[in-house]
Amino acid sequence: RTRALLQQLPPQDCDERFCPDLAEEERRQLRAFSARRRREALGQGLACPVPGPCHGCPCKKCGRRLNKGDPGISASRLGDQFWHPSCFSCHFCHQPLVDLIYFQQDGRIYCGRHHAELFRPRCASCDQLIFMEECIEAEGRRWHLEHFCCLECDVPLRGQRYVMTSGRPCCRSCFESLFAEPCQACGDPIGADSEEATHQGLRWHARAACFCCSRCRQPLRGQPLVCRRGRLFCSETCSLGRDASSTTSDSSDSAFTSAPSPDS
Ligand SMILES: [Zn+2]
Ligand SMILES: [Zn+2]
Ligand SMILES: [Zn+2]
Ligand SMILES: [Zn+2]
Ligand SMILES: [Zn+2]
Ligand SMILES: [Zn+2]
Image 1: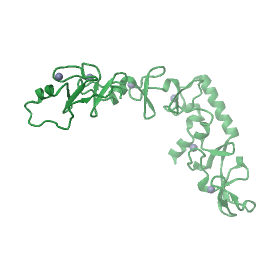
Image 2 (image 1 turned 180 degrees about the vertical axis):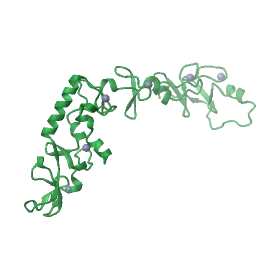
Image 3 (image 1 turned 90 degrees about the vertical axis):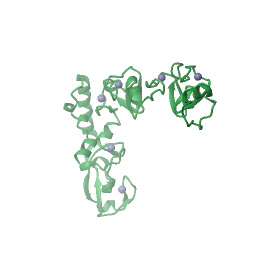
């Protein structure tokens, strides 16, 4: 219940003591915002049997009829409306409202969190409402300017290049060390900025120093190549030269597969 309560009624939405980093102007806005919501939207549902005059009226949420004497919930801010107890839930997240505490807007009921988000973006990092003029938006989520930081090293990414990964920003260098595939030749990650050559699911830097014949070092970009056990050769001759002592040769490779374009 405590968890649901914190989820539905985030204390930082209405009490500046939970937002220690706010500037004075943001504090002022938070106080005004919170006071207005209390005054105009906040209410608590009342559980009571459906009274006679409302016999047969539709549940505000599911539309199925409520009969006289059925358990029902009414909300004083929404007049003579009734809900099934299980239907008294947030219009946005559909969670049953803890202690029947609701916020109304345009005839609908919301939990505190989602009611606040009708008016203010919420920072995906600190979970506080954003009262600054500016915020950062990426993939449908929002951040305080100073909270848009690398998920790994926490470096601020405002105005920097970044990569989004599972909805969170990551700086270029962390992204490369975390997620980039290593080059078969040099072992370094192949960054998003560098060209890549692939063959049979293996990857190389497309540069001549990496994507080249393992024996004679001839660059293989755009050239026919032979791939044996993850190593590249310019020709059957070079590949056999290296593998001459081996009793088995990898016959599944075609001798003249051309490299796919590096940006494929
Ligand atoms: Zn219902
Ligand atoms: Zn909700
Ligand atoms: Zn934030
Ligand atoms: Zn980083
Ligand atoms: Zn390389
Ligand atoms: Zn060669």
